[in-house]
Image (cartoon, rainbow, N blue to C red; front, top):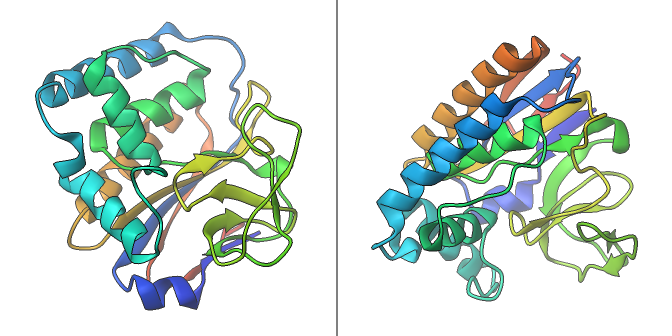
Length: 235
């Protein structure tokens, strides 16, 4: 499996970058209270920082609002996942635990204020790409079995089967979600050089450390940008 960002995306956003982790041999069964504690700490810290602030003005949020506006996407109607998450936490310092992997992904994303995806590799087919959607492509919303049609020209994560995320980092789909049986996982962390690159790198290092600590799994890391737009995730 390869991961790549299309040339058309880089034409619009030459400073776009993605840090990637692939974890293999993960045992996500059972519940480790420590992952919930780590997430709760990240949530409380973010709430204390943001409760009296305008989340939209945070640089980590603003960069996505500007990117969406450049593409003709209304960020008020389709906020990036990190904006929606931080707004929710700013109002109330609570967030539900899901499973060990997702708890850690959420904790690291919240702390570093960057969108982090998590996709079950065994539920995917072919290459994973960030590109503009094509005529007739479909998407299965989270917690749904019904597919919806995706209009062409929308920035998406997609594999050979279907669109995996709508509006780039707005909403992830059902098909590759992380469950207790997920053992091979693709984690992309999206950002922009000179704006959130340090956040992205910090998130990758922190999540990689957690994966080693809690799951003793094999991990591989990659860096995608305009000068290196493709990676073989098997190497």
